[in-house]
Length: 182
Image 1 (cartoon, rainbow, N blue to C red):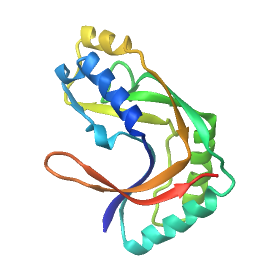
Image 2: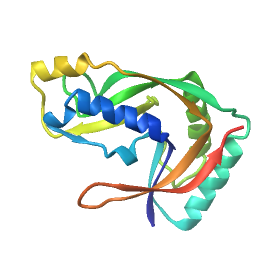
Image 3: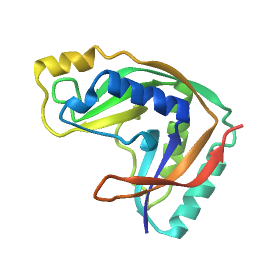
């Protein structure tokens, strides 16, 4: 069994730019568990623990489902707080792309046909997680986060199926399969 999710790995230059934002904004001074630079990605769907046979089934379904999709661009800008600004638990960068939302919707509809995959009950909000808050923030800290600015463009030409191994020092991600867009 492996913990598995579908996502989009980020190129090294974008990971470096995100790390630059974290350092410039001194996010390490906040009560925040920052995501390791190597683990930066855009999540599409978390599957949980899967057997090798289930992974093979998902690989086939993803390959089939993305057949008509071509490479597309995403705009990455500014910050997003989950679940909301006043009681944030997750700090992220906002990812804007109608193409990504369309691709995710198509995949979710296909995943709904498989009994071992939990149905998606929330609206898909593409994002890049920067970190998870360990405790609440002061009003000054919230204002600082709200003022963060970021801008980048990403060309999405592939999706990856990741295995996630949980360790005491944080998760380690390994790409199991890559799915190329046209």
